[in-house]
Image (cartoon, rainbow, N blue to C red; front, side, top):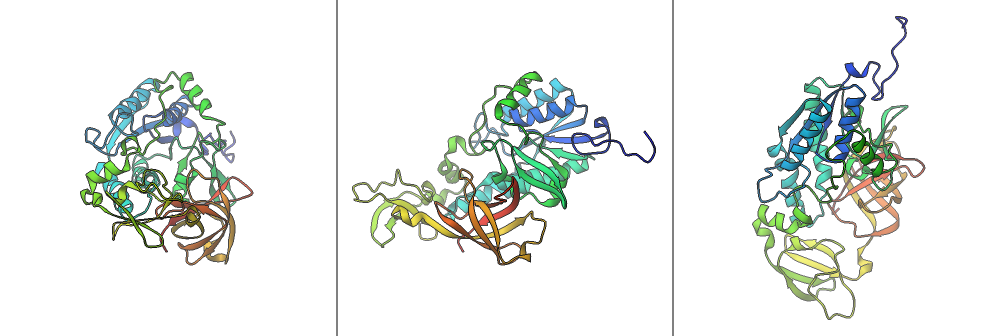
Length: 380
């Protein structure tokens, strides 16, 4: 190779041989991150696997199959042994409790519907673990998330996964431009989860048929209420279920048992109209219910915005984009009006039901796969 000619870029975007490129892989013990680690090891990269112990898996909050329980640490270690790269387990229990679990409990008690997986990515995996990867002199950190990182005119861009069913962009909106430069998502281009499992089988990984975890890792069987009771015993204090017109309809045994938009299990049968939870007031221990049309929201206040656009967020009075206000909803047309660099009012062209403080509002380009960041919905 001539002295003035640079070597070609490897699959991770570095102008050097894979063997000279160190990559830390965040390994949860599941099939996705295991395939990433195995794929990169087979390509000849200098792979270092890292698994985080995020809470005491022997404690009452844990469950078999949770993303960071003991079984998963064992599975991650077996993958590393199979593919022949080093693997480390780091105790992040205190960090995780302070940065994720405590806020989850407090937000829930405040009548919000928190999304702790976003905070975990933002405050633990893409912050502390990313810094650990740099301490290990890694060139980059790879994860098993279904999202794409592409290089644009202004640097790294965040794009939705090729498989819209598996796309995890809603949970990664708070990834900063600086973090995005260091991160890699090798699965984002795959057409389906079946492709990932086929790769796991190809590499002979023991996790090839391991089922996906459907729950928040520290919430057994999706039972938020039981977890909150352990963390905040006062959360089960009883109060009134009140109609939006002021009528007291019944008593409840704790606001933690209710979520915005809930219809079933309210304990107020026998009324002529179906009623839904439209507001939770933790201070007065009140659950407010009303007709379905009260759930429709057009104006959404958003703060803590992480902007991933090329032009400054405040450079326009309005941004016409698409937004997701819940992870399970498709993006919908919206007008975003900046208030400051980190605050905005989002006007939904078509009102959405069940919009709740504590959830994320993620910004999408309506004409491409690009994600422009997003922020957190608050009460206003």
